[in-house]
Image (cartoon, rainbow, N blue to C red; front, side, top):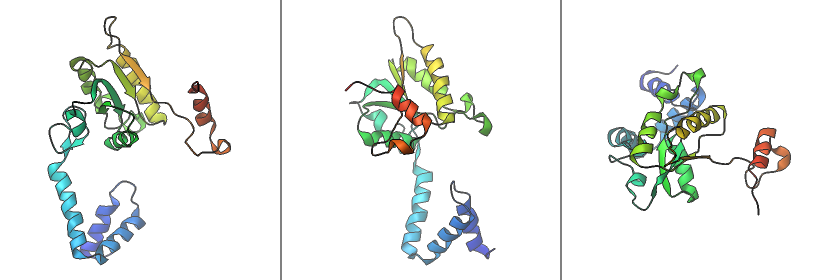
Length: 202
């Protein structure tokens, strides 16, 4: 235990996700040694994020305005929506430059163990968008883990019921498999199985 502000800083840093007691201590002592201007910039950035950043009223991405830059971009296809768990997943997909539709951020994944159910996510907002924006395809890009797969399965069943004979809704799932540059011998059975089931003609 350290005295006063140092211990307070260690405890505050330790409450951040992925930061254990030792990491919190290292970060606190690093901040003690940095130039005061650097520490002030960090503090100002944290305050600015809390004061200026909100969630997009349409897709729940982070934004400084009522709608994020992607939702405001008229060049994007509003009839195709890609569903992701978190804003950071959205940015990962944006870096590929492959998707030109719009997004919908759920704010997590269904996880009964963690007490997260469908009502805790932005699923109702997605269903409203389906009707209001005349969406014809939804791409499910949740994480390829147990929670992400459960969320994708739940959404697939729900979204197919939204479509009609006159206006069917296509529900697709991003493929998963072997990473580029990976070796077959190190891949697990589930990854290899998905790589086979998702194979395509050349």
